[in-house]
Length: 138
Ligand SMILES: [Zn+2]
Image (tube, rainbow, N blue to C red; front, side, top):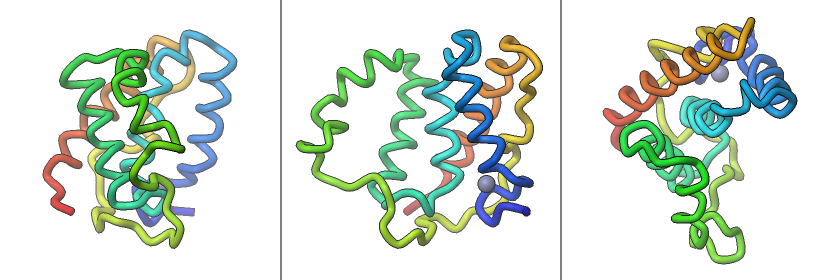
């Protein structure tokens, strides 16, 4: 089926397949942080408003400020530690918090035949999504 949020065919299946690849092959795993944040930003029904803004900020830290996932994790330790975090990330009602449904790139634009192509395409997808997400006011 066509996803109502990102506009791609069977994106959830693709996402699940990619996570398996990333967890079983370190070459693919290097972009795991980008895959998750980018997919979440395009699927705001999985997030609260604060969660969506948090994911967008996370992606910006990775792509614009060139922070490593390890560094960002440390920096946000208090924030991402569930017991201390002041807001919920996961949506309870499943209602999208943004109304954007057309994106220049989706998870379908990512080639998975080898790790180099995969990392290159995930990065390109993440950059486009961050650019487009930064124009959204919520
Ligand atoms: Zn989708």
